[in-house]
Image (tube, rainbow, N blue to C red; front, side, top):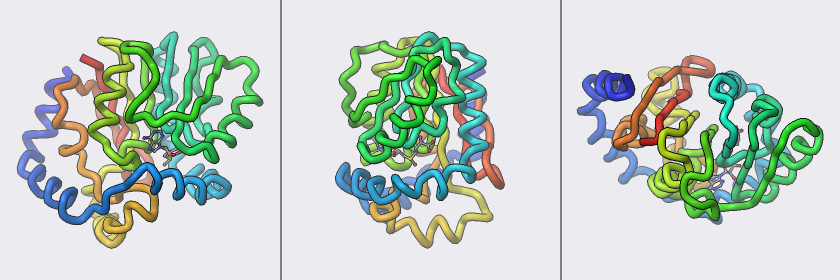
Length: 233
Ligand SMILES: C[S@@+](CC[C@H](N)C(=O)[O-])C[C@H]1O[C@@H](n2cnc3c(N)ncnc32)[C@H](O)[C@@H]1O
């Protein structure tokens, strides 16, 4: 099933990959760890008001998928201010990591109000995690892939720490929406300043890996983001 979803998507969009690569390599300012830390230090006190409600439908779709899976162990990469934490099953052992201690401080406050959940939060760069191979049944990554300095390194790490046959849930904005075309291009050179890449191709970032895509669902206003469910092969 996974292969056919990927095949269908890639058949219609294959020629688009080279365009994606052009935009990635020619127009994107590289994002550094320092950029992420500085930007999210600025965003932390405002984050929930700026990006809370606007991106909540996607988070709800992701947490619903986790509840359906009922994993015994769950890692949320880039947990931010912890907006998803209350929606995860209380039966799961939950670990949340983030590179921004300012975002994590808010997540810690949230977690402290969830006494029935088993939640551990830690400051860590997800591109080089301290966890042994195959540590988690499920990895959730809401709105992080287009933020991290090196998406390929992050993908390699999440595949390493997720057990074989486990589930990886990626929620992210991907470019290509006609409605946002102008805005995506207008701000793409500012990725290091605004804290995310606006011009982020699904083909280039998701379809190129030899993992099994189980489903892809459009979420958020105008289907601006996608929830991708992947089996870790
Ligand atoms: C757009 S926010 C998303 C926060 C949260 N997941 C949500 O749903 O609102 C991106 C988060 O990813 C974190 N982040 C980016 N790159 C990271 C990395 N390599 N390792 C750990 N956290 C990272 C940022 O610090 C920030 O808190």
